[in-house]
Length: 210
Image 1 (tube, rainbow, N blue to C red):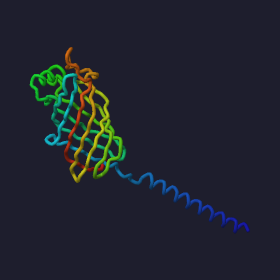
Image 2: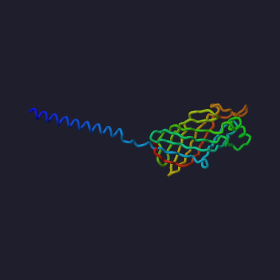
Image 3: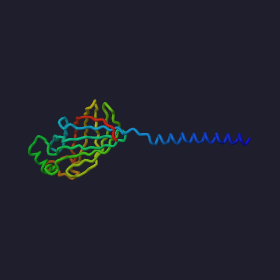
Image 4: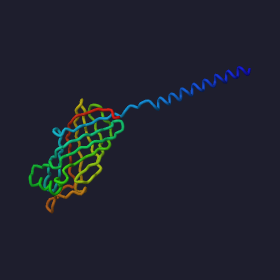
């Protein structure tokens, strides 16, 4: 009887030990197994194919103009929504088609001789990014204008096709509220915000971030 009990006890201990070993091994494998890296895409802007359009309303007329991109890239971790990169616009390229008005804009409002660049530094993207095709996302980041830094969220519509991409965005910049000089006078009242429209084209890169 005692021998039978000892045998059962020994078998029980072996079974428990084997089960614990399997559980521990499984946990160890799960802990040490390499996790799939986040998927990162890089959207490079081609300045030659991209443009910034702006519109400023006033009590007399509406002024339309443009700026040129210097360079730009947007890196997005599509699994986490984190973003990075930098998009730079040439402030000295601002043009409305009127020499005297543009001279005043550059000298008194933008002071582009001192602040030659307008910069957007993205930090996160909200919304789903399709691996190919069209989608709409909200891109949040830091907008640097005239030496001041301001948080800004830009709605972007984009299309990915092969290794190319196109995108557009529309948003407003409250430049007077951000401390830039009001270009209006007693007879001419201008809007406190300028409407911005971006047309962007460039290369698409896919990579796995380490």
